Length: 156
Image 1 (cartoon, rainbow, N blue to C red):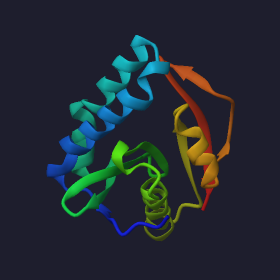
Image 2: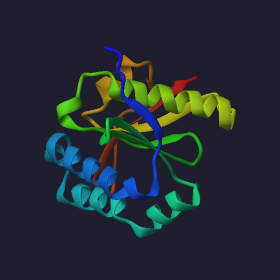
Image 3: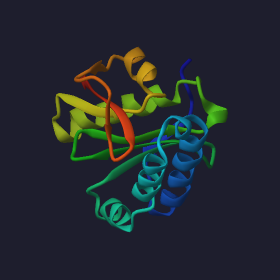
């Protein structure tokens, strides 16, 4: 289902809401398959002040999906072509928001970066979603610092 949600670059004052959305969604759908170390490392990642400074300086980009004024989804980009975080509010799952965020990011990468592919380390919960929208596995599932992921890519 297509959405009529607005997708755009995130404003500085939306950082905390976006990271709160990531944390809430992670706890609901991911944390149960992670070790305590993995949960702690994810929390440390999204609360890292260095990450926020990188966002403010433009080297860690974030795009958001809005339903009116409510932030309902977010996607971040690191190292120019790697999806770092992608989360959609649970109440808005299966409405095309995740797909729309990835499409927006892909259009941005093609137009602004000249990239020909995007990568992601998909969480166990996200693997099926990424496969459905055309990503392919690069390697089998891995675990690093308690974080479980499958390296994937999508050719733009």
